[in-house]
Length: 447
Ligand SMILES: Cc1cc2nc3c(=O)[nH]c(=O)nc-3n(C[C@H](O)[C@H](O)[C@H](O)COP(=O)(O)OP(=O)(O)OC[C@H]3O[C@@H](n4cnc5c(N)ncnc54)[C@H](O)[C@@H]3O)c2cc1C
Image 1 (tube, protein in one colour):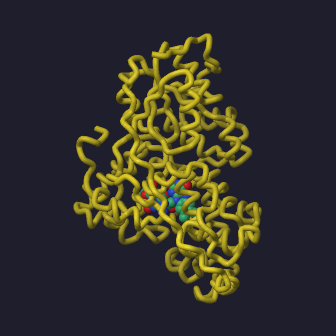
Image 2 (cartoon, protein in one colour):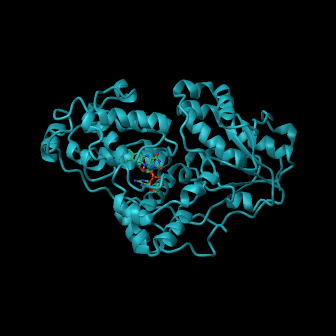
Image 3 (spheres, rainbow, N blue to C red):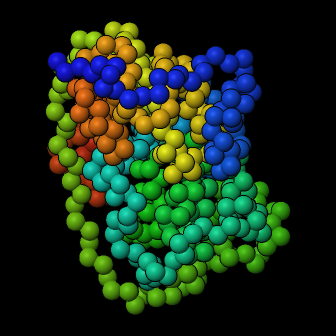
């Protein structure tokens, strides 16, 4: 087996703190350590990171109330997204909890279908990688890409448009790192269609703030709104917003009765997309075929270290469980954090997740730190959790120049046939629905 020595490994060797008196102490430390994140946005969001908080939330889900109220802003949604995003809990685990609570697949079906959207987007991410930043299909708005502004206007980012709803969503995004799905759709439609800003600018803004910020779910949802990953642009009118918010914004809006959302869908379409009728019908987009399932993982190293990353922060992950108590490492990638303008609240959430894991916390160049850590532990290989992220793949390949890396996947959410067509959710769902609505087979479960 290949192994690295301390002499050929380059890493900082300096661990970050793990002991804190309370959240304030942690936040003070992180403000000092990540000053750039404070300049992006210094808010700290209420949800705490970590498995304990995720399990408490999971215990409160109500699939029946969810099905009846999920579109309402105050509906019984789960708020599990930051934990699902970072693999603190798995989709299979939430599905199983929903089936047990809902008592039947039919009662739990609505929530499970929404979990399916996450699985669907992750599968597309595995296929497209960085291409999720590019429009997947032509715009169906009658406008061309050059008609859209490059940058997010400041009045949207700062919540000073004068529209009570939009300004409240902007403020909530920045302060809580969360928005209800409907609010995300309205805000995205406002940015892209009412202000004609490129969807990528809005997507970047969301990823800065959302605790569940995920390049796949986020960018493909923005594209769904924009019409570059759907058959038509998504828009809404004031009546729609008023209905699902029980009028809470319109009641106090200085622009009530004369806002840009006023009017029928037909009138709004004519105003927003005056050239849509002249647009040449775009050819139907061809299939988007999923890759074949991954091969069986390589044999486990005899003396591994575990590389923990942001797509799996579950203390019961296969990688941690199968390592036999091996030392584990997490590395903050400062360059990535700065480039993506990640705000302080996201860092606090992730750090809290890490504090529940038996992991050494470092910062620097990820692969170099993992290799140096492995050398210090006299390891002969690295164990890690699977991820569809192209960034993960780049780091994995760098580590493999020095050490073998074994990638372990968690229990899949659905049994997906090879070559599954991912062009539209409906095509995916038709093929996987039956397995999605069944309990995770014991043989595949985590525990
Ligand atoms: C413009 C836009 C951007 C978005 N960006 C993200 C993002 O960065 N990260 C993210 O996780 N979700 C994103 N979503 C999807 C969705 O809005 C959130 O997952 C959901 O609102 C999270 O709240 P919840 O946990 O209470 O969801 P619930 O309604 O309780 O749903 C349970 C879980 O199912 C999954 N889910 C539900 N709806 C969707 C959906 N439409 N797409 C993908 N997964 C879904 C999530 O993991 C969610 O936690 C975005 C949607 C839009 C319209």
